[in-house]
Image 1: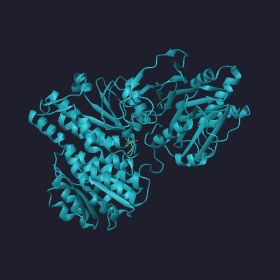
Image 2 (image 1 turned 45 degrees about the vertical axis):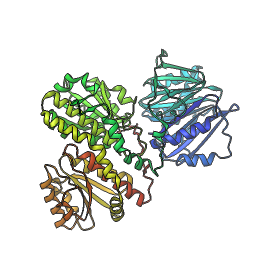
Image 3 (image 1 turned 90 degrees about the vertical axis):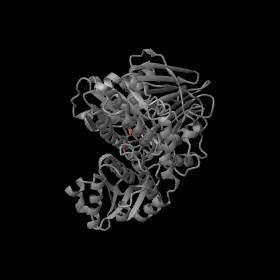
Image 4 (image 1 turned 30 degrees about the horizontal axis):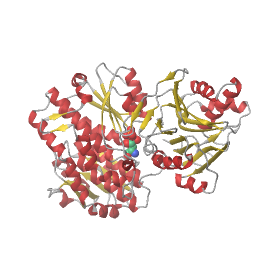
Length: 612
Ligand code: M6R
């Protein structure tokens, strides 16, 4: 949540910050703002709404500066408005601050400050933190860096902050705990951002700042310290990412681009790992820990949202192929119910961003309890990737659209390969089945391409049902989590109320909703549940519900029963979710477009949810 950018160097800071904010807009788009120091003056411009509105507002204003910070907000404390937009200015008018995170004890601190005569222009916790720093600096007659250090020892919560002082235009001070911060190292210049996307076009050398670190950033110097004021050695990493990967490349929306990238992203995920000729799956994170993974009495999968759906499918796959009991947990619930973790339990954390606060906090506490953490993460170098004992990247490339698409299929691909590799090592699957599933997995990119070749039928279905007020998504077995995922996609992109359910469970309640206006989407590919799902379709038809089906290409039963059908190529039931999800991603995209919504930035959402 919230994107932050900073620049210090010889160039004009404003255009760099503005461009960076546009790249980070997926993290929040309730308001945007910049603070610049030029000619010994602090200029702050901020506006409710998207970065484009800030850009328009700043036209003709003084934006000349070689140092500046910028923020794009996902509101937590205080409604989206001009006055709650960041940067905030301290009471003495000298300091400007941007913040990503939540200060949980801000009310107490605010009360103390109000008693001392401080006034507040916004309802945010961030402005409280800033004035707290000002107050500490005044009372202790210390440097701003020292005041920040003292303040951070008292605050409870999560933060990534950037702080500048009009009296010192040579320094940006930054700090992080729980919210990400990357610093790009240029020649006589530094770039700061929530992720590498605003930095990549200027430099590939970056430092990922760790929790509880403070960075003192000048154009020609980067000093990292811990909260005990001890210097830390910055660890420089080379970015493995291209600018083209984070641009739309001719597509109207990132979401459509990312859906269409799936043949390549799945292929990239398999590349170098799935070696069919040698009958081998190469995944170093697994090889190095094979005994732990083979002997785990239990696997607990922890994730949120779409990543949680990938985890649900993995539960079926791991239990089938590895015969290890699996539990799938919402990270936010897992963390706060004091879960029982036994010696040897393995936690698989699934996350696209690697920064989701609920997942991160859940993992921290599981790690403290001695669990082995295996991360399935997309964002290289992210917090979850670094916190894990071992892991496998999904290699889907940057995912910018708020709705997760290619990251999901990347997660499934990695999880299926993991289960195959562990199951084979445990001898819980036969050699024949192992090879057959490898073959099926290898054919997925081509099959996804086939689905994407012609989407006119899906567009037609989207237009036909776009005005429905509710949708029911049903599936069984491996396709049940796909029904949940289809419902989530439709909700977030088109704002249509949608529920996902196991198809057989429908008769225990939701069937009461069925009437002729209700579209019921069945994920009904040919698998071991097929005959059962045919009966479930009949049950809906008998009650006059409108049936839309995702069916296997050669099926001639379901298409005769359904009002509308989207076909996918045949595949083993373990592999089928990688295909059956694609029409559902497209359906939600086209419904969102037909309704005129901003599919890349759906209301109230943010790509990376870094608050608990
Ligand atoms: O980055 P993560 O995978 O940890 O994010 C988890 C969820 O916030 C995410 O999947 C969310 O549900 C997406 N908007 C779904 O499209």
